[in-house]
Length: 313
Image (cartoon, rainbow, N blue to C red; front, side, top):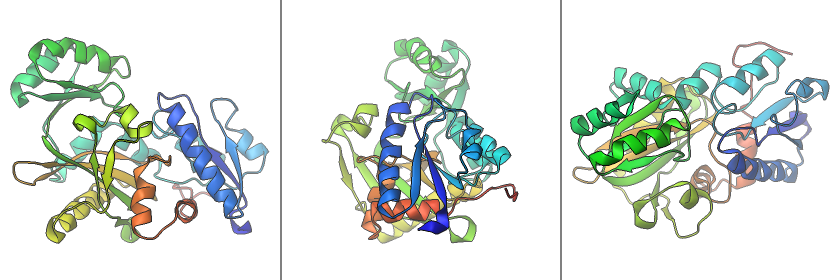
């Protein structure tokens, strides 16, 4: 596929999710090469990103996760270099990476998300526990893959939960815990062409979908499509798509949703603008349910690469 030119697969990076990014990038690199695309691995933590221009790369597939890859920073660098890239632009990436800002925008658009508060000290976590009730979810506002997450079940855990989250981010999110089914919805496309793919239900051991269960264990179960009524499925997919469009996201993303056990009410948790592409990842699983192979998914994502400012090299 010579029309894509020379493609850099950005992977690794310097975030807490580096290991997973290397796994994602390795898979994407192999898939693009299998499709005849001139793709090359590029780790921006090991090389100056300006080398992309020096080495005449035509575009970049962003397989970075977390900070300096999913938060608008590398997107801004690519805009300055004039290298078209996959996924959302600078602003959408930065906002989506910050769970507090994301939720503020969703709330202004009347999209349902659990009650939340920003904690600046352990006392704020205790206040949130008393306002929202226990259990309480406490996590860094700008990390992914459940890094730094604590499910607080008693008030004496509040201080420790705050410290665990603050190791990863100065901004700590306290969130009402929704007891129910854990769902995720992949979105592919941009603007009017964006669409929600089949919903996946995640059934983790002991209900704990943590970092290890996400990427390194095989006893987490997934149901795709999730067992939901047509009406409820359509409602959740529409909610996820609106969450994506409201933030001005592009290309692809994955929206995480909790379905409350008591009344089947869906609540938006967060959105990932550079989703995982490992053997355990969920976007490829949703694509497979639609008959789209991993290799074809990678090409589909790459085909959406562009500069969001309208500039050209």
